[in-house]
Length: 450
Image 1 (cartoon, rainbow, N blue to C red):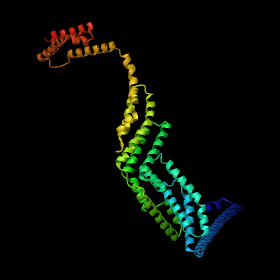
Image 2 (image 1 turned 90 degrees about the vertical axis):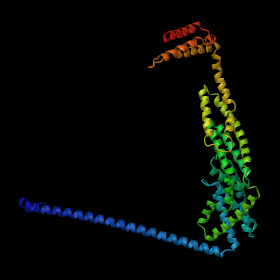
Image 3 (image 1 turned 180 degrees about the vertical axis):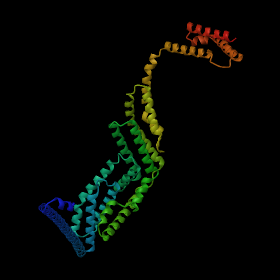
Image 4 (image 1 turned 30 degrees about the vertical axis):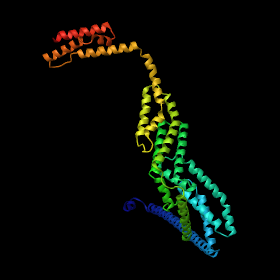
């Protein structure tokens, strides 16, 4: 603002009026600034109050948790003998594990190991404790544990049908072996039986032939790795030797006192000892390769017998030989690619197709043979022979037009003329027009080249 110019141009009253307006404006801005500062200050006070309130709640919660721990530990120490304390730990472990077994996303082997632990703890409570209350609580859990065993056996058996990976099959078959006490031979029979049921289901669901061949290949690959190479028995021995860490038991012990974990580990060692003794008495060795091969051969024959019906049904829809050949090529490629050593791919090929493809090919070719009459075949053959002889007589373009070349052509023509005339006549279907045309061509070549 140019003050000198305003003082020269304006009167005193006007200048006083401007000054008053400026003072009012400045006062309004000061008031707004004071209000803004006041609001910010109140916000800070409220935030500080909330922080203090949250801090006080956190301190109170921490104090309550500490008091709870102290009161629990003191009451735990004061109540009963060591046997009663151990029984309480066992009851807690049983309830925790039973409620966790069979949860979504759990491993079958985890569930079975946890269940074996539950059964061991229940036997300890029933047989080794004199308290009537402990007996009552333990027996009240019996029906629930029996039902849990039945559910585990059914679940492990029913979900085995669609397992075609060796690691998953190892986990589940090891769980079945520990839970039901099956030996390695029974596990092989169970796996092959369930995989046969799965292929039956695929056929009922209108699966393709190549899908079924692929499932046969996967099944034999799993059998080779688990039962021939001994991966399954190695996994079972590793579990029984305590090298397997059950996640359910680990999670249960994670937020408990060290004494609880030590008690559980001692009981778990007893479970492993019992498992080893039971395993050693049930033929826990590997199966002979010949026996595995015989069982797989019988399974292949049974599986291909039911799958052959699907092959026959598919062949009924073929209209030409190209479709039949495409099917054979696709099956051949699938059988040759990564086929396991156990089980013959040739045997699968023969038993799967049998005579269905050949019969279909014959039915497709039969109308073609009926339409091809002998006279038509003779006509076609005579035409082809005439074209062949005429091509032999053609003079091809060649820069070397010497006497030797002409002499060679003349000799060829003479040889054809003096050859077995009856044979050429028969090949030309005794057609006078064809014979005359050929003779004229040969004579013209002889005259031209001699």
